[in-house]
Length: 206
Image (cartoon, rainbow, N blue to C red; front, side):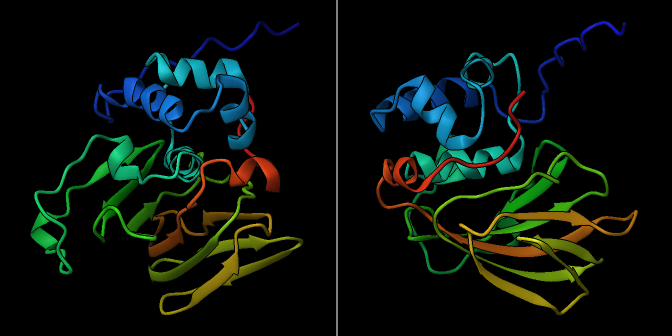
C-alpha cells in the first residue's frame, strides 16, 4: 500500500503577504471559510492552508478567489498603483509566478474586467476544469493552446481567440513543450455572493 503523499513545501514565488490578504479579503466579503472554499472548488482545509501560508495558490486559484471576493489578483497580491491610468507601459509590467504559470498585469485595478498576459507551461497544474460566473476572452500570442469547452476540445494557434461564458466548464493547457503565451481578459463578480447562488467552481479539491 502506498503511503500518503507529503504536503508540498510552501513556495517562494509569491509575496509573503498573500496568505494574510486571502483571509482578510474573505472576511471583508463576509464569507466563512467553508462558503469561500466551496465556491472556489476547494476543501476548507486546503483554503485554510492557503490562508496560513502552508501552501501557495496557483494562478487559476487566485483568479477564482478574486472573482469570489469581488476583487482582482493585484489586490490579492497587495500590489498597488499610484493612480489608475488608461495606459499600462511594458516597463511597468512585472512578472509574477503562481503554480507554474507566469503572468503580467495588462490593465489597471478597480475595473469591471481584468486583463492579463499569461504564459502557461506544458503540463502545468493550470490544466484544471473551471466553472464560475462571468465571461472570458483569450487571444493566443505564441504556441498552441488546448481549450476544452464543455465536451468539445479546440486547438488554438497564434492569432486565434476565444470568447465564452465562464459557466461553461472549461480547461486550458499548453499543447507544445515550449508552452503557450496568451492575452486573457475576464469579468469580475460585482457581488461576492453571486457565485454561491450560481454554483461552485470545479477544481483542485485536495
